[in-house]
Length: 129
Image (cartoon, rainbow, N blue to C red; front, side):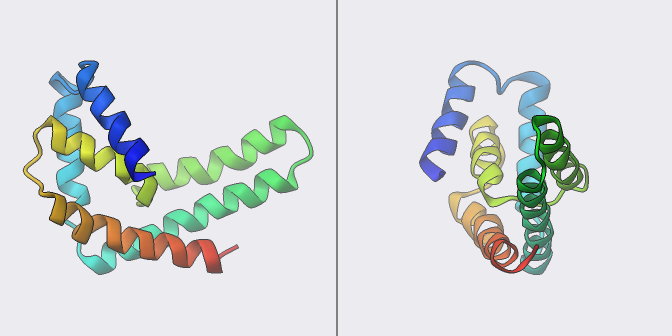
């Protein structure tokens, strides 16, 4: 996941997607995602993966494609709308922000985001729903 997300962020930079408003959004997002406390990031990650697991559960419970789509849509939309944190999504978003010019080091990315998120996502993935 890390390599694929990093490669996709590099492709977005190369393709010219990280300019103007998109560049500023990537920088702002990266700064926000690396400025949380460990506890806040951890809890947001637990909540996020709880929603992801709920989406998988609802999708599996549905019998037809429409039901599966609705089952996935609401939990995923909820975690995005409430700014919950998903480790794999951030493996793209934060490197993209760094490539766009955010003043965040690789150590900050790992310590302030990836570690608490991986732990929180793993706890929720193993224990929720």
